[in-house]
Structure formats: structure tokens, C-alpha cells
Image (cartoon, rainbow, N blue to C red):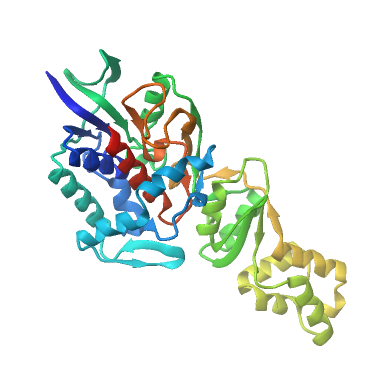
Length: 393
């Protein structure tokens, strides 16, 4: 059996559904296919089940790419306010958490239901549990083979996502298609992911499991000041997830455990004002008691502060304000929220999301070498890039 469409979209996630809706609105005959039984699983599990669907502070500097300017056009064409308007149109109640992050009041399923309804209104044909055997181009048409069936279209949109969260079906399918058509793919890595450490640091993390604090985590000139969490596997929390997108294996990261206090000055002042006070008690004023105890032990520091030299106090303060540690790696794609790298943006038009080499072939969403910061930015990239492709496909 052969069926003809104007547009075929592979991947019914955030970007894929958005592009299907927009192409369908233009009167295009659209087929949206996905290998999964349940549509939009990454949307459903995001934001603790409430979907951090965008960020009111979205702007190009919140994204990582080999070509940082690539995102500008799409983000201008379809903004966070445009998606908020769609949410309001469907009467989905939402709230702002810290740093401009927007979440559904009730459930992420509301976002999925909204997108599926919009697909239905736009007359999109949706085929679930569809395993694609091959993708080719012949006679200026894109051919998608599924078992003994063939689907033909003028335009093909690849919205298959990245490699993060394989348990919900993530795969390298989109990268394979890009390479088959001769497009360059930037090396992929897990991003927005907890970091792992050697046995010595891991032992500290295990002892402090569940402890969180506001910390500045930095790599070279990039830093994030958000929550950091000690876990039995290493370090996590927003500031660590953020820096993981920038960190390079083999290099150190730096952590300021008390960013609002210059610890060296504080300790020197306390040495003068209260010389007989125990150092561990003083450090416990700066840090949670368990962490203070470990920091003192690691620095072999004990006794009254008057007994400690300025050099020893300097070393102690550095271990609080400028703790330098070397991650051994990350937890990988299993727990990564997104994938760094992907289809090279030099291969794609920033205006249309279409391949420069192959008219009618589009790449959108996470499969492209665009990675947002934590906090709704990756969803906004999905909405924006999907919208743009839907205007041209």
C-alpha cells in the first residue's frame, strides 16, 4: 500500500506535534508517526509531572550551540508569550516558580491533550506504534517505509529527539537519517545531568545524601547559582545540572558552598572577636552541621580558632568558597534531561529549519545542535523550531 501526503513528521513529541499542527493549519495533508504506544512521554514526565513548558525569560543566551545565533530567528517567530497564549486558549491553569519557570497547576497530561486536540483540529493523521524500516528520497519525494507500506511526501520533518531518557524510547534514529542524507552531526553528550566522582568525593556525597544548599557551581567563566544536592551517586541539583552542559571530562569544576560570605575575612574577624571558640562550631554557622564537620575533618582542622594559623584558616576558607573537584563523569543519558550536540546547525536554515542540501527535509527540536538551560528553555525550543518548520513544510 502506498499513501501520499504533503508532509510526514517522524516523532510525535513536543516539536513534532507543534510542526504537525502548524502545517495542518495551512491546509497541508499531514502524517505524524511515532514508535511509541503513548504519545508525548517526555512531556508527561517533565517537571515532576507538571511540565515546565516554557520560561518567561527566554532569550538566545539561554541556549548552547556551535552556532549561538542560530536560535534567534525561531525564538523571535514563536515566542514564549505565543505558547502562553495557546495555554490560556485551552484554559490550562499554570504558575510561575523561581527564575521565570512556568508549570501546569494540575498535570503535564494537559499539555499533551492540548497538542493532540490541536492536531485533530488541523486534520493531522496520527499513527502510533509505527516502526520505520527505511527512509529514502526518489523522484523528488521522501519515501518512508513501514512494513509493507510506503508513505510518500514532498516534505519530511525529523523530530525524533535526542538520546536522553532511553527508558521512554530515545534513540539515534534522527542522527542516522541526517548522516544518511550527508548532513554533519556534532558529537552528542548527556546534558543537564548529575555528575559522578571518585571514591573519596563519593564517600563525602554518600555521607551527606539528601543535603541541599544554595551554591555557585562554575566551570571556567560559566557559573550558576542555584540549588545543589548531595546524593548517594554524586552531586545533583539545578546548579550542577546546569554546569554539566558546559563541563568537559578531565577538567575541574569549582563550587562556592557559601557564596554570600567571604569566609576568609569572616574567620579572621572571629579569631579576633572570639579566639576561644571551637572552629567546627564557627564553620557550622556558615554551613549545615554535617557538611561543616566533614570540611573540618578533610582539612585536618580542630580546636579553638586562636590555635590555628592564618595559613590553615586560608586553606579552610578556600575549601568552602573555592572547592575545586574533578568529576569522573556523569550519570549518562539514563538520567540526562537533554542531549548536547546533534545535527549541525550549519546544515540547516535558521529561517525555515530546512536542510540546505535537501529541499523539503527539516530537522527540529532536540535532534538539532541546540541545548537550552534548565527551566523550560528546551520546551520553548521545541515549540519555536516546530512552529517555524510547520510554516514552510
